[in-house]
Length: 194
Image 1: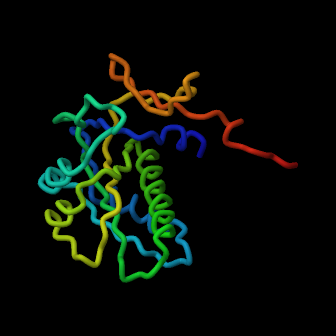
Image 2: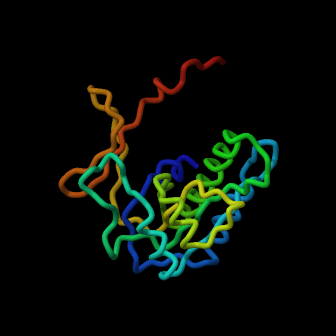
């Protein structure tokens, strides 16, 4: 589990010659369906995409890596080969904060499943939801939350200590290596009894 958690980075560049099958995508999403759900309400629904025409509709509706201002996202050949669109079924009445908690758990299960098979992904919350709804003919009952972009990663993502200026912004060097500053365990754990 430690190895999977450490490999589970936000990957944004992929090898498009390594597709993800619908069978893989269904299996990974089934693991999302097994995740915990507040009040066991299970308000999430999913749209799966692993074909080029649908992927080409979804891709331009996503904004990539907000901290990297001079990058518009993956180039052709580096784009995701599958997506999981995560939706809230608004007919399932539950507090909004519960929906977001469920979404985080479900997305993490999808990503860990992908990592285990040598793939990876990124939860994209900056989505043109209105256009996504129109392009995928999503019924008004379902509210788009995030899109999990998936593929075979081709980028080197490294965890580094937070610099002395305290910046948490991820960045890339000239070689394209992606660095993600993380706080130390001593900052996360406020107390440890026993």
